[in-house]
Amino acid sequence: MDGAVPRTDLSVAPSFGMFSDFLRNINRVNASASPSGRTKPDSSNSEAQKKKREQDEAKLANIYEAFQFDTLWSKLSDVLSRMKNDPGAAQILLPLIESMMVVSQHVANPEPDTSSTSGELVRPPLSRSSTQGAPKSPREAMEDNFFAFTEKHRKILNIMVRQNPSLMSGSFALLVRNPKVLDFDNKKNYFTQQLHKGRRDHYTPLSLSVRRNSVFEDSFRYFSRKTGPEVKHGKLNVRFNNEEGIDAGGVTREWFQVLARAMFNPDYALFQPCAADRTTYQPNRMSYVNPDHLSFFKFVGRIIGKAIYDGRLLDAYFTRSFYKHILGKPVDYRDLESIDPEYFKSLEWMLNNDITDILDLTFTVDDEEFGETKVIDLKPNGTNIAVTELNKQEYLRLVTEQRLTKSIRSQIDAFLDGFNEIIPADLIRIFSEQELELLISGLPDIDVDAWKNNTELHGYSSGDAVIQWWWRAVRSFDQTEKAKLLQFITGTSKVPLEGFAHLQGVQGTQRFNIHKAYGADRLPAAHTCFNQLDLPQYDSYEKLRSLLLIAINEGGEGFGFA
Image (cartoon, rainbow, N blue to C red; front, side, top):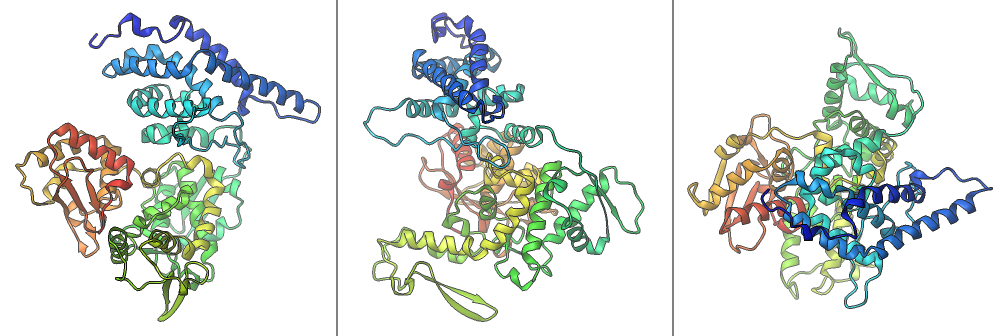
């Protein structure tokens, strides 16, 4: 075969052919060292079990040292690089990869946190070592090798997981700790498997009858009498009053869609559309005008969690910052773009310019409610603390925290109270905020020809090589990559029912537009308020495609001001 591996390159271990047996032995040790393989301790044997576990974990750590796994990671990476165009041949290395993953789990985190109330193993994300010059500990060396290996060979690893999904619950479990290398479909399969695993008690069906014009209130009253486990595990059976039809799945599907639209009914004052596109929604900080608003937010959290649990899709799109809150991720000032484009633009200017003797600001924000303006301190005595060139970063952080978190803290918490009754908080965090939107609302059907026919060019013409390469790259993307690209440019994966000619921006209908940018080594940048892409004049198709994938998968760096 092309790129065949020389026999000498397989000398990554004392005897390559013995690794299947080696893996079986490691898995036996791992089974007793891992929480999932332990029996529940009691007062008579807990000390003995703890000692046995520590011994088994020490064995795995010793294996890592004895077999010089640091060198093995590098050698194995070289071999896989030669096989990158023949993933089938790479399958012969699977036992070796599994062995290294299993042993590395215990070097990375010998005492994992099992305090999760969901019963899931809590494994904090690995982080690269920041120590410069100092000798690395086995853990730090393993982490560096693990990151380098998984990021370089993500394509082959995803193929292996796709062909054998059970790897993610076994020897490949460590990949969950670097989730960005996993493709969305593999994450979703793992998530679904973990969400539904284990025995569960029998729960009575959720049989509800609702009035079509009062679906939100009727459904709310019904679910308010149910516990979290009852909502999670009960099978839905829905009937619309005075309408014929037995629910074989279609009525429940319609109920989810009608209910999703009702969530955004302005009469409930729960959510408000974002200024940038009018199609994504953010919790309304003044939802308190509705005395039941927090109970309603908990109900909405339950419904979205139930839809995910049952594999139902909702026509419900939220802001990037709200998805981050669901995932427990920090927000940053760039998330303000969709909510208040002009304010975001002023913050971007402040960040990129010296503000000395230009701006007269203090650590406060004005909060207007029903015509009355209140001044809120961003920190103690903020009224008397001037914003300067030296402390402007802190100001941006505190402003963002106030606008996107503190002002809607009670709404977020109420939503999460309901959502996490159905979906464990630690499990949902495998997804990025972009992927969470796809999990809730599904992958869009993107017509590339329609997209191309409704595109405006600025500084380029349709015959330019870069534009030809752009559309070639878009067509080469799979469905998930196309959805992430649309999210990157417009802020959401939602395609208007009327098509790309009706994309919405801050000023109403705003077609997708490509602007010529400078700096051939820079990532493409997006201005979501205007559905605008700044595309540098790259010198090859390969460079354009690779940098575009980095931009849509890594996020942040390619984000411009609106």
